[in-house]
Image (cartoon, rainbow, N blue to C red; front, side):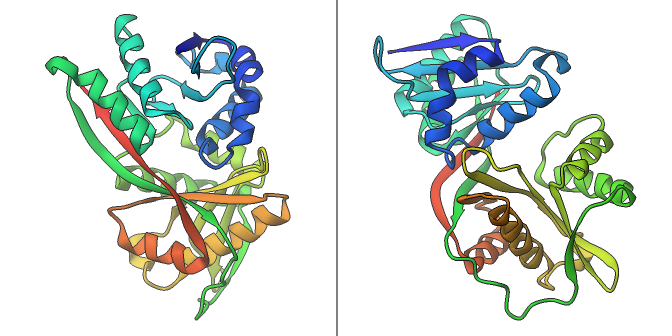
Length: 282
């Protein structure tokens, strides 16, 4: 049972690409990160990305994966708990400080326990999350006024502000140049806006279709406009867009501490796949 670590995107895709594609829902974050790195280049980051894949024995198929783009936290894909614990010990032995770890609840808990063993460090829960997959889409009822449309270059300033507000609300870091991210996702048609009376009131990101999967993220409505059904409407519209683009699986994450969003997505037809966890490591 062993991990292979690498800083090569090509090596990671060659070794783990089939495994990533075989479990697109559980590996959704890694699939989109790999796609992004392939588009912009691994050398676009100040620190080189870290990749890893785990095999339960010599010559066995890959059965666990992780990816990290420092300074962001390490992200586990579908990975057995034992492999999560082994990875923590390996990184500690190499002097690597991941800062945090996210992914499926069981392997993340195993990673955190191994990382903190003997009082060597601390772990704090940042987010308890749940991965959902769309079944049969149920359109919001009653539907709010307005319509969905793709974002345009004229929305740049507004979406940049909304993304910064979203990151602050969930306590997450964001790229230094949010405007560049908005430009890129707008050009790719990945941002959908709900407008009511010609006024933007909510938005959702829709990731490209990878291995038959697309993820809805992020979703944001300004606080003063919440409770009117706009988030439900824009997520439903984004889900339709993803399926029309060829997605067989449309997924999203919810924060389990937010009962409103969990209720909204359940009513739209999203069903739980697995619980997840994000830990901050000290």
